[in-house]
Amino acid sequence: MNAVLDDRVRRAHLGKFDCTIIGNISQPIEWPVNIDSKMVQVLPNYILHSALGIIGRGTVAVKAKSMAGVSRDLALKIYWPEEERPDEAKTISQAIAKRADPDIYNHLPTVYATQDFACRTGAVREALQVQNEAGSQSRVLRVTVFTFLVPITSLSKHEFIRAWLDCVRCECYKTWLMCI
Image: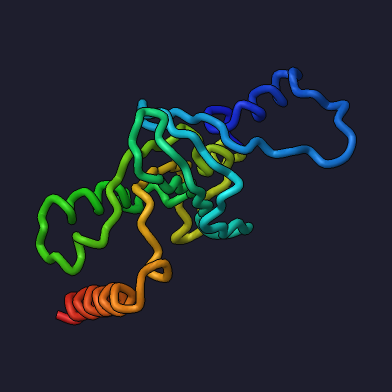
């Protein structure tokens, strides 16, 4: 939970949250979030992916929209990558800038905004003076906002086959690069 992403967290910790509610608590239909100095309206009722668990990156992706007049839908990804892991947004931006292979860069989303928050899982280990297990690294809370890519299942039959072949060619090319 992060007070910057959800104001309800801040209100709950400051005692200004209504604790007299009995029954189900309704989730907001949307709420504004400032990511990398860009205002984004999060649409939590449109969950695209959720992999919450006790281990892993705890990735959640939801639909979003820009509050600055960008007409395309956006996808907001909240996750906890290891601090040493290369930033996905930078990798995508570099691949698009290089334009090395149209089979790859034409199918990458545009990064609209990205931000790392000061929350780290290593802070608890440090406070308790617990050593990291071998290979275990501290994780950081990262939010990345991408342009929403149209699912290939929404395409016509001919467009679907073309998109599917592009996916196969891209994956084969990536696998071939790993082998050499």
